[in-house]
Length: 113
Image 1 (tube, rainbow, N blue to C red):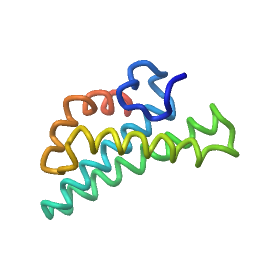
Image 2: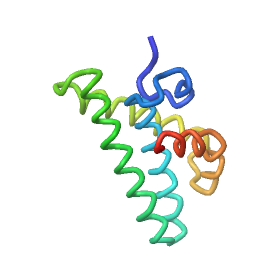
Image 3: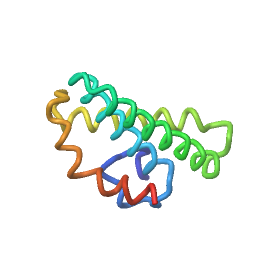
C-alpha cells in the first residue's frame, strides 16, 4: 500500500492526486519558512499563496477519492508525512531549503498547469 503523502512516491501516484497536491503544499510551506527566516515578506506571501492553492486542490482531490467524511484526516496524515520527510531532507535547517528544489520544483510547477 502506498503511504499517503510520501514525497518520494509522488511519481508513483496519479499526478493530480491528494498526495501530489499535498507534497507541493508542504514544499511551498518549507519555502515560506525559509523566506520568513530571511525577512523576505513578499516571498513569504507568494509561497503562502501557492501553499494555500495546493491545499485547496489536495482537499478537493481527497474528497473525490476518499469521500467528504475523511478529507481532513487523509490530508493531515499526508501533510505530516511530507513535512517530516522534507525536514529530514534539509536536516532541519531552513538554510538548506534549496535542496528541495531538485526534487519538487519542476513537479509542482507541472502540477499547476
